[in-house]
Image (tube, rainbow, N blue to C red; front, top):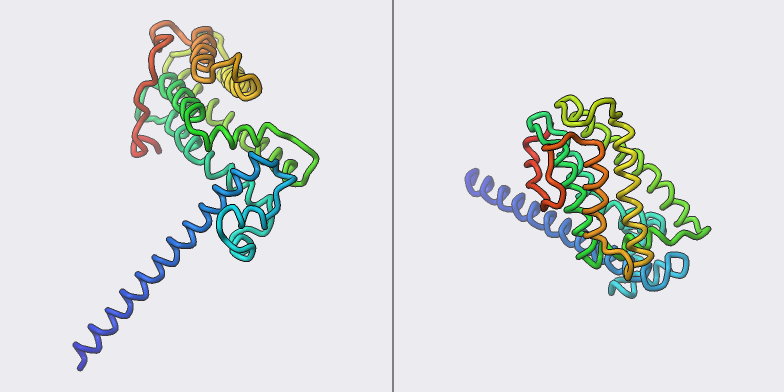
Amino acid sequence: MFVNGYTSGRFIQQLHNAMARKTKEEAQATREGILDAALACFHENGVASTSLAAIGERAGYSRGAVYWHFKNKTEVLEAIILRERIPFIKRLHRTYSPHRVTPVLDLRSAMLVSVSELANEPRLRNMMEIMLRNDLSAESQAMQKLQHDSLDEELAIFCRTLERAQELGQLRDNVDAATVARILYAGLTGVLYSAMMEPERFDLERDNLETMDALLFYYVKPGVFTPGDPPSPLPDPDEVD
C-alpha cells in the first residue's frame, strides 16, 4: 500500500505540474494574442482611438480576459514596446564582453542587425511608427517616459562598449568615448526617424550602414573595421559577464 500510495501521489503531483504548465502556457499565449491585436489596433487607429474592448474583439477574447492581463491601455502599450525592446537590449549587452577584443565590430553588428530586423519585420516597423506618433494622451506621455528611460540605458551601454574599445586602443587619440556614444546614438535615431517618416527617400538598411560606418570611420583607428562589410557574428551569451 505504501508503494502504491507513493506512486499514486507522485502521479497526482506530475499531473498537477503538467496542468500548471499548460495553464501558464495558455495564459502566455493569450497575453501574446492580446499584444498582437493591440499592436494592430494602435497602428491602424491610433492609441487614443483604441479601447481595450476593441483590442479584445480583435484578439478574439472578452474584455474581461484583456483586463485580467492588463489594467489599462498604458500597460498594454508598455508591454508591446518592452516585448520588442528586450532582444535589442540583450544584443547590446553582448557588445562589451571582457572576453572579446572586438567591441567596435560587435557594436556595429548589433546596430546593423537590429535595424535590418526593423526594416524587414512588419511588427517591429509598426511598433516604431506608433512610437513616433505623439499626442497628449496619458498613454503617449507614458510612452515618452519609457523612451526617455530607454535612451539613458542604451546610451550607457554604447558608452561602456566604446570605453572597452578605448582600453584596447581602438579609438583615435583624444577621442571621448561618451561623445562617440552620443553621436552614434544620434545618427542611429536620425536614420530611424527619417526612414519612418519619409520611406520613399530613405532606405533604412542602406542609410543606416552608411551613417554608422561614416561616424565610426571618423572616431575609430584604421584597420579596426572595414566600412561596407556585412555584420560580423555577435558573441555568444556565455561570453558576456
